[in-house]
Image (cartoon, rainbow, N blue to C red; front, side, top):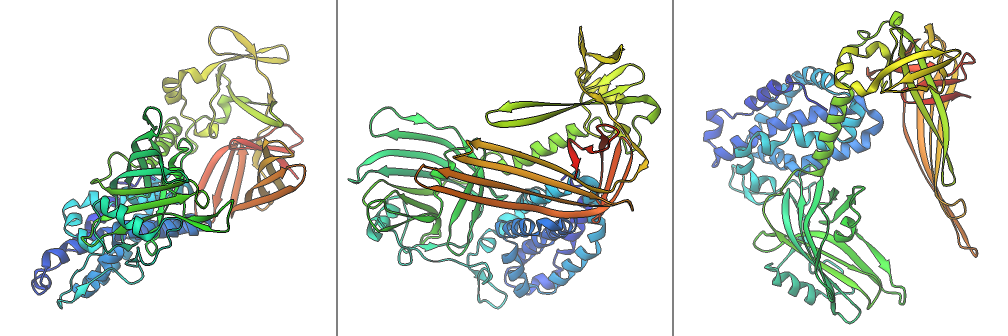
Length: 580
């Protein structure tokens, strides 16, 4: 999501509205705190507009959007700001909300103009909010001024009474007395925390803002002898990203060695203080370092062992992290204690991913003209579509190729959208290796990319009529098996477009993973099935262009054609669909 510059003045207006008049600020005991809280809360209203925009543009992803928005509110301390202002300057809140409502249409229009893929942006809404409604970056002075307030520390209301975090946020509870540490005992855990500088009593849960922690994990065997010591820095970012750096391992025997950096995302439960992480594809140790909450039954006894990674706070207000894991009663265990190490260092992996997707979108659209301002039908000789299969283990994979032929003898090998939206001049200059020549050799076609001519596999595609009216279901189906049919897992994807002659369509999609384990003595099967939200709207199929306009108003223009005159296979976007 690239937020248009139009959003910035809207944000400034909202913040200006949050400036508390002198007469209001003079009465309370801490006018500077009220002023700072009002500025941040005004800026946070843009976050609410982004959430509402996402709910309109991607209604099927409501759960993901609401979860991400709630996590951003928690990380930013919006709920605490609202609770404080409700007591300290209640007249400010309706003014800020009303102004946000007045600017909503303008803000949403700017979001529409700046988003290449609303659904993708909204699925990563926490990253977007962390970037475009980042209160710490927008107003660092006000953010610092309200630190204790946003973190739930006690302050004072205008009446002089203690002000705490809103009840629905949760301020945590007892840690030592309310936690089952089996197979560890409470006295030993308390000793470990004291050795790390913690001061009893300890509470669990409550606010957890962005920060870095220096962690030490000790693995012990069944005799409580240390077998390995891990040391690493854990960075928690405000957008839900997590990164482990400077990690090293010192085993009981042998030399110490370093681990590669680990990255992913985390969620945090305020009530229990539990952190859960999900590693990215390159981080195979992250979920070992930050133990997942749960319990594991002993392999030799009936004892249940408790495993978790939690945020706690000591008597002085210092935030610590404590984690433990066991692999069976009186067997291997691990124990982790993390102490504060300042602000998180570097860029969050969530933000890195957002930047990478934005760069991909930029490059993807670099050679894209305004709709209909690319090639004209008279300039196009045709599109050659090729289809081949290859084996990958027990899987048979289909691979498609698309080559655009122009009447002037040029060939384009990187067609990613409809030819009518292709900026030929920019493409030739920016990606010259994607261009070549074509010619007829009897009944065959040849292309040259470089010095030599070669046969062009495939056949000329059949464009749609002006306009083409479709009727029926066109389905894409794929399956891939990892392992074997007897013991493995198969992932499937099924997407169906239902077209009607009146120019309307419905899109349905889903995926499933089926597992099968056959040991010879027993056979276990299982399935996990998910579905994408159903979309519907209108379509227009003309030449090599399919334009889809869904009910949310999102317009998608892409390349489309039939394989042949039977019109049983429809290529749409980047893959083919078969008439059912």
